Image 1 (tube, rainbow, N blue to C red):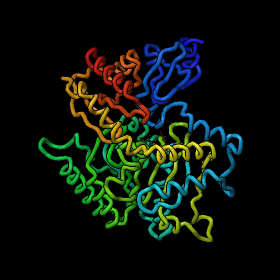
Image 2 (tube, protein in one colour):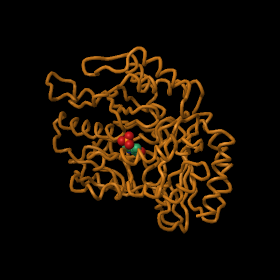
Image 3 (tube, helix red, strand yellow):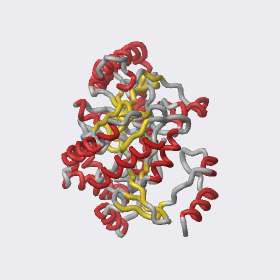
Image 4 (cartoon, rainbow, N blue to C red):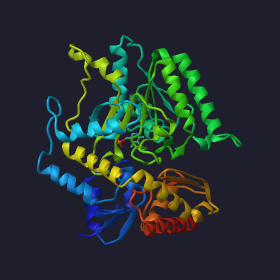
Length: 436
Ligand SMILES: *Cc1c(COP(=O)(O)O)cnc(C)c1O
């Protein structure tokens, strides 16, 4: 079957995410037949460079032989088993490995399926911790302006992206947002670090007044991804950690997008030398293969639930919690990181891409070009209406999968992008900038 046939059937039967379906009257859907490395291929034989890692999940390319083999091996042994009252090798091994790799002492792993479910778990666990510790009035959550933590009701309550939030506002819990350290919002002449310090002072003022009723601060360490790849100085995280300690408020690090090497270190928190009380991971966890998320937490939190009373336990579950196939994929991902010395290799790869991006940096319409680790972003001047959609369409014609966030264009490629593909990405992006 051709693209056109799949497209018509998909429009008829599939309600696509984050989409006003009517746009597909004019904007074509792209039915993908197969993937290989950083490339996706449609049913008409056209190819697209997956420069956004299929919504930030893919790390080592599509149809990665190593991950394929791990999943296939697991498939023949055990595809799934209930995790309440049962355990299995992949979930034990993955939990142990994550505990060794994560910053600080996060030795207890609680699994969910998607990123948003990890956020729900962290929020509920934090609240319940305080209740179990005799502080039931600590029910509030504080997050950063322009932050994103997912779209289920709890996660959306701490998200601050009006496009996703406004419609559902009556369903959400009231939460508070403090100023973002996003460097794009710094006043002229103010350094990223000073801007971060000012934002931390606002957090301090808020916590001083409200800590008694606040359970946790949740934030995306170093890069607010959905909020337009807003990057900020690590000093904010150091200060946020110190303030959370001082005011007895949990720190939830949502590394769902930035974890697994995106910011140049395995976890973004490492760059501030801090450890959160809860670390939420998903997206890259399985290399972009299967839905799996996890919340890692401390002995201190775990101990607050450990009791003779059932109701003091964390009575939360998802059917596919700790799915063995997904855990095996995650173990294969961690092996690739270790054996390929990927974090080190990415330093060179990142520099190569930045060097090659010179024509984009020099382009007259490009502003605020920025990079952290394996994330690149820039703003486009004179973008005009419907910029994101028009850019996406033009990029497809250049064999590129790019989906700007508003007028922010970003690259978040799989770590297997090669020399020729980098050149393809830069050349195609410049061509789109010239046309639009
Ligand atoms: C994507 C994302 C989520 C939500 O993950 P889903 O798997 O889409 O539910 C939460 N937090 C951050 C920072 C994300 O980027």
